[in-house]
Length: 410
Ligand code: AMP
Image 1 (cartoon, rainbow, N blue to C red):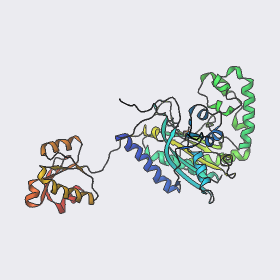
Image 2 (image 1 turned 135 degrees about the horizontal axis):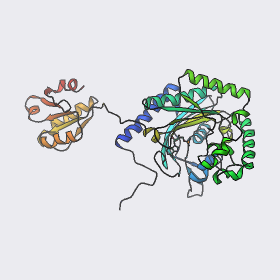
Image 3 (image 1 turned 180 degrees about the vertical axis):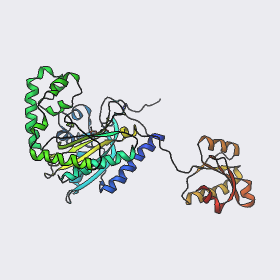
Image 4 (image 1 turned 90 degrees about the vertical axis):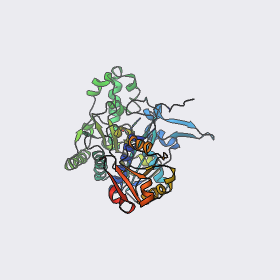
């Protein structure tokens, strides 16, 4: 019986795993430099943690969550996103006493979407959250953090920041009412999918990819016209700072993002290089979300990025790890080989024991495995404490003693 992986899941190994680890390494490095602490949360949580905050009518809640009853009838959901678990964990563990509180995490998320390139049912996200401040520098900082990570991992790619502001939550509420009224008046011209969103969250209609909706969206009342002067000034200030930081920005008035709690700054980092699943990172400000989850009325700003999507844009990683093989001439030399093996490991080199005990087979295996060096352990060692060291890249072979071998390999 051959058991296949579940649709939309994948195993990670070889070149892909190297890329994955590079992303995680880069994320941890930049998190440290920007002062964000790691927070790891469980993969499953109570379903209620996601239902209200994400919006009962949102696609994630309606169609995509992996929800099941535990044996005691509790309803559990495999986490579809990381912001709400981070807030839950920060509140539960008393991590919001010293503000602002900055956290990051990487880990698996689960959404029952239709799988395609860049879209999976189990995927890995990077998440950064800053709780407890509405200083606009925290918006700029979190965008700069995303930009820095992407630039370091993908220096050869063109990635653009798409930016918008939704204004304050109060302002947004008024705008949503205006939009609902407008879309209700033009209901017969909208796709069925969008009609379902008119009352629950008309903002999501602006995100619609349905061509039927294009015309009616084009003519809808514009959010920017409803923004207060002070909100517009804050937005201007953010844009100017992003210019000062040299972050390529495209102002996108249609960008609204999915979550019901977004307000003020919203943003996405996009690329033209991977087809329809083109958003690498998405985020924004979510003042009100912490309160909705039973906490204090604290503001927050953050983003999530898809590791697999970033990996699609990465080049293969050339490793500079030394790949050293031992070629043991015959089983009688095993004890000398063991001494060499131990010596290399203790000196922090990696070494490969090939179980062949036959020079010809050993050399052929070392070549298949693309070894850089091969150390031949045999008669030479037995008689005068020397080894043959062969550099398989240059083809050069030297006779060296144990004391000098490290200098040759370095
Ligand atoms: P979201 O939480 O939907 O804003 O997603 C944030 C980021 O996670 C996206 O920009 C993608 O890079 C990534 N992402 C979201 N859904 C998926 C998925 N089904 N498969 C792979 N990556 C995803």
